[in-house]
Image (cartoon, rainbow, N blue to C red; front, side, top):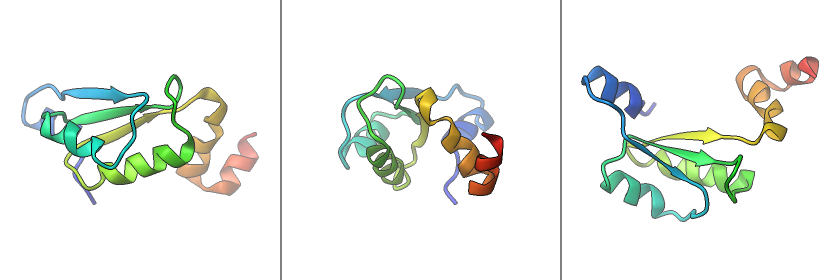
Length: 95
């Protein structure tokens, strides 16, 4: 499992430096963000132009870098958090 770069920064006694994506999604973006020295990138689904497929692609592309990806989802997709954390059965019972 990949090390969380935010936790690594804190452990090293420094602030974690991050940026946010709202519109651009290509395989090269995570590498550019890593080369710029960022520790994390927030992928904005709430105000951004990304669908869930694009977010999944971005998250997987970030796995190949030392940058941690954080996803800010739109409230209409909040039910997916329960499903991911506890499985589909827990998500159905929470509704």
